[in-house]
Image (cartoon, rainbow, N blue to C red):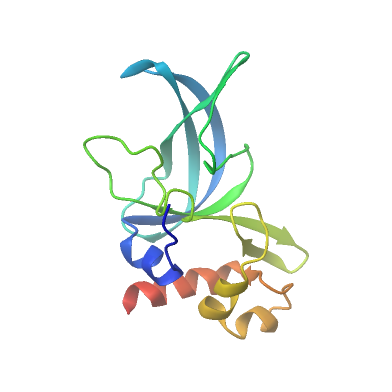
Length: 164
């Protein structure tokens, strides 16, 4: 997997949205029943770029059915109720293993504290490079811990990167 810098993630994403996970369900892949897939349903809170319906299902390769598990290292895990900024690759005739830009790099977890919503990596950990390049001093302005960026500043950074 090749590292995709933030500007490239923003520029190459077909669709970008902020959404909350409403359902996660594993099943046998209808096109290849020996393999599992997981369908993650998001309620879209905000469309940042492209066209995204109010609810969207994303198909990820792998999953757990009963006692059997099929997984791919680095595939994002999602839980109902979690909120994310999601950057999607363009749909393709042959479905991708992962619909996210850079396999898992276009997934950012939205966290909340008393001051409001802020963004970390897909696990909620700090984004040291992105905090500087996306929001610059805005991270300090909003009083966020180092490497976390206020959600509004993060979304503004995405829009600015797409405009370049």
